[in-house]
Length: 161
Length: 231
Image (tube, helix red, strand yellow):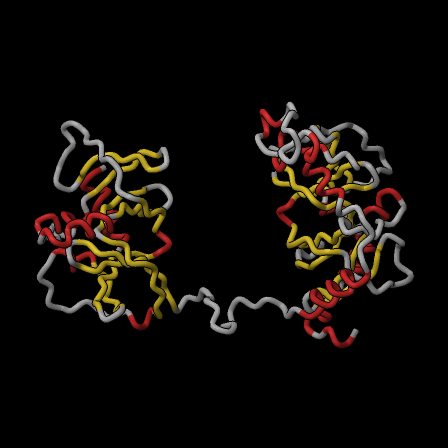
């Protein structure tokens, strides 16, 4: 499995590359309110309005720094109804990929009842321990409904927003 | 991060670094690439962010169906073929079947398995493949007995082509590889009804290319015949 690596603080995380559309530089996002703080905002991505989630904020509670290496990973996100949407994930130091067999993923047994399910298995590497992010669990149902529902209309007619 | 070891003990310095024995050049060294990456650990200039915000907002959604300013867009109405010359005939195979074009290499014959059709085994990038005389299969005249004057140039143009679908790869020796041609499928002309040569049996149609008539080979039939006669 080819994985895209990124950092949250000093810790390495990995994302399965099969859902990654592209990695783009950090852009200016339009802040939206009354959403969880880790939602960085919305931006216009090739004619569509796409929400951006700040993974650093989501995991460690601090927003990503505005460095050159902070980038947005555009991913395909499949909702409950199997509809395909774009989602931007902002993370720090998105500069490398890693190819490791799936069997190298080790369940570290750190899953408590209240551990978010998107934090997946651990992976050992020269660079240190890498935790896999499970994209499919990244948004809980209610947030998914809010952020990604109805974005079909927006894709067709971005001018309304 | 001010440790610019590549300037001191690396390739720009006195080359005394122990790592150089294994990595050969500083650019292969993890220390060097880590230093390079650290250049990205800087505040992004606002113009940079603005510019990218604009670029990503503007680009229209990529549509694969429409023709964009002369760019070649794959569509069911066109086909790409690889055109080559063999025994004075122009032949074409679908480009999707072409695996490789290489210079001719040694053909290792197999004892008791030599026929006019099956020439032997060749080593293409470490893979042992079967080399088949396409000119024999298609009943084309061999160019070997043509006039001596152009034999040097024809030898230089000789190529081996590896053709096949997933499981079966065949190697053909051709006189010259002419290139890849793209044409609308409706321009494919039917084979003349009067068929005199065996080649025609493998011909799906005729393509006009640079004033020549090119035989578009029926690859399915070709491969199934080869499978039957050799495997």
